[in-house]
Amino acid sequence: MLHRLLRSLMAVTATCLLLACESSPISPDTVRTATSTATTIPGDREPRVVFVISQGLFFDVAGVPQPLPMHGEFQLLINGRTEFGPGQPGFLGGRWWVDLNRDGIQNHGDHFFFSPLLSPGRKTP
Image 1 (tube, helix red, strand yellow):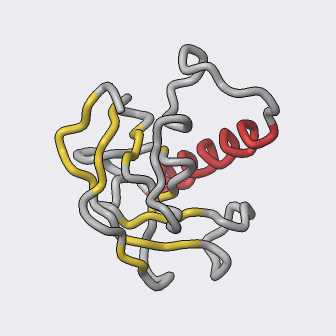
Image 2 (cartoon, rainbow, N blue to C red; image 1 turned 90 degrees about the horizontal axis):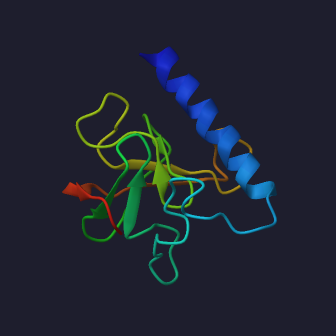
């Protein structure tokens, strides 16, 4: 399971790097993402809506995100998108990691927080 999680994390990170280097906007018909639809809480880094790539569903987040210390497992969240959602192996119940310094490693330069997803998910933001 750890091997699968690491492989998925590497795939998501590679996708993020490719998208970050692209200068033109991405068409919603080209890539299934929530980049343009995830709304950010003013003054914070956490989205109010998370798109689960493997499920193709949008989920609202519950309440105000709570900062966490960098202890334990965290699920990578990139521009309001993540690979795994509720009911799937790899979903960590709302323990998120945002790679602020874009080095692909969980460290003190990043943001860690708890914000559970509200089920059910939906096809539109």
